[in-house]
Image (cartoon, rainbow, N blue to C red; front, side, top):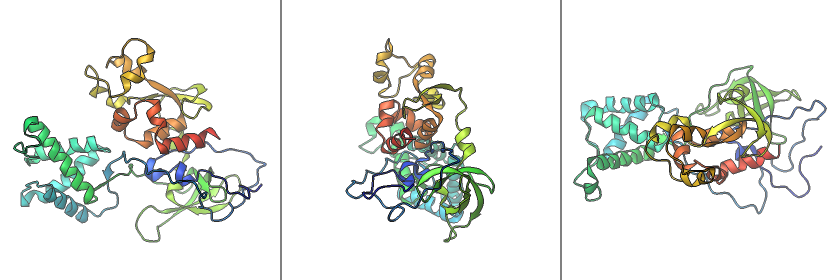
Length: 349
């Protein structure tokens, strides 16, 4: 049948609901109906948006990773320029080593957010004997040397952003291979369907992600599409190593196999054990009984039951450290536009 109506309906385009490059979100499982004919082309331009619908504000940048695809020489030059702009005194004969070490430290420690990068910069400058900040500065004099160094690391991180050494993008998606089973967006209805990779096509400009030629399972249609609109099925099936239970997902409200999502991710528990809980957690858990404590028992039990698709989408929305500090309740997750769009989309499947 024809998709749409004489009056263009508001619908979520795949680029809005599931932008892999921005939020690393996961699509819902495809429908399998052997009697279904292939959808017809959408009315008008296939990427048209509904008139009169206000644009949503841009998503808050929660990822911070090394800029991908930058040649090493240009990358090192940008790092040295950022260090100079931030007022760091790096010896001339150590500048190349300093730049290479920054890339190595960031990669080895998988730095993916502001806090992780500040830790990398503090360690890097300590190892190279490069002073960060100025304790004589009036703004930080009373806070001591640690605060001065942190302020210096924050200034350096800002300079790295301006010189495009780091960017607000998630880690790049894994490479695809010919013959791999995937979900891909069919251009006729802008929905996700099962397909297989036929081949990878180098980008026209010679830079960036390759285009992907896929063949859809249901209709045997071959289509060229962007990498952002192709997700390996293996990534969907095996993303979280957690026991499943049947029930209703606390985000999309669908009845599916569920996994337990720690609202304070397990990888961050050591930061809070015996110290204090992240802001907002005690208030959110106040209806569960006695006042929550930063104990192993509480942190392991504080969470929500989510379907695998919502669970994966949450973890692709933000790094663990950011989830723990800023998105540690269900209400905070629901308030984020990219997640809200995905939940609305998934709940209708």
